[in-house]
Image 1 (cartoon, rainbow, N blue to C red):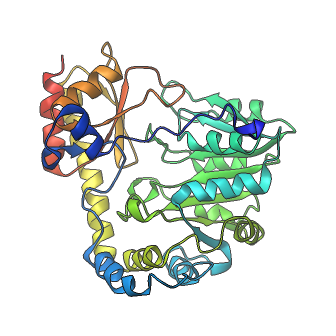
Image 2 (image 1 turned 90 degrees about the vertical axis):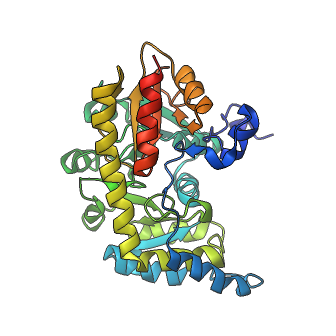
Length: 359
């Protein structure tokens, strides 16, 4: 076995509805799944139609570089096709690709934690060394701490904005300061469509070391299709096209993503639902329960359930047919925090009702 993978931890995903139903003896039809930041509205009807139409071509290889999707993304983002690269499975493949390009054994990647755990898992699997930097008490990024952690071995700084699981964003001024460092700055904007702060993709036009990662899993409701993409300087896009396996975006996934980009009404409805829902949960949890809800720019929020533990909260909610995410697997967040995906209004009301009983 390659020594670099001996100590790499396994990624811990949220439990599926089927897993929870079997473990707790629940009716899967009654379970509310709010642990993986999925879109409760699902994919749009246009997407479903496109998938059915494309099914007949499933015996044929897809376009190697997903060029149809790249053209559609060009219209969506305003960047030329040469600055865009799409790949599957999801954002994870983009992260793997970045680490393949830049991280050799012994090289470092700097990661402000708590955050999405796969940055470090991927880098470690290639012999890299994850260097975790604690965020501030309010989970904001500390530029000073990141700059202090950067060394001659640092190749990439990974910043999730809005951050998973805490929901806060990095500012443009902070990004500009970090972009002066001699390494790649990867901004994971998986949740940017839900954010009150604008995307920072415009900075790709100014800096040759800024990469923006995006996904179709959240606002577009395509988590099961596994499509990620980057907006990046052309030289990085060309290298990603070299190291990421060809045909990684399937025929059905590409058709689904192109259709999703064309359905602005569904996207707007999904964003509005998330923003209204997180405001509702913020107000109700703060006013009607003894627990602290944190403001968020994503389609999720974290709740501190102290003095209870996150495990106790998750178990209690599961017994009441609600799946939320324990944050125990996120470094630097403690043992009393849960992450709740924003659901429909009916789902959100149910969450508040159950949390009121958790005392």
